[in-house]
Image (cartoon, rainbow, N blue to C red; front, top):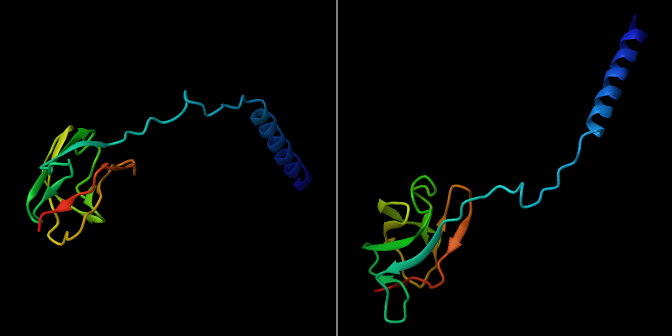
Length: 129
């Protein structure tokens, strides 16, 4: 009886392997890639005369761009340097954030969305101290 069980198990395993080997392999090309959403910042106000975002720590700045809504970016997803910023208001194309009070030096403005995709704005934030 035990030999019969081992032979049946072996036959089932071989049959499963044969069935799997007959499957077509799929190539992970552009047709199969997952289109992860990237959040982008296209403008920051206020900015200085050279276009660098600026503001007094503890006050608000406005970020405009794409995919900035709460369905894409959580409350800790907007950062100046490595410090998350408080959100005053948020929509798909605009967000008003509060500059962290301990911001003392030029820092990147970063948005990290729910897909863990990170975008760094092209010009650093310059605190107006």
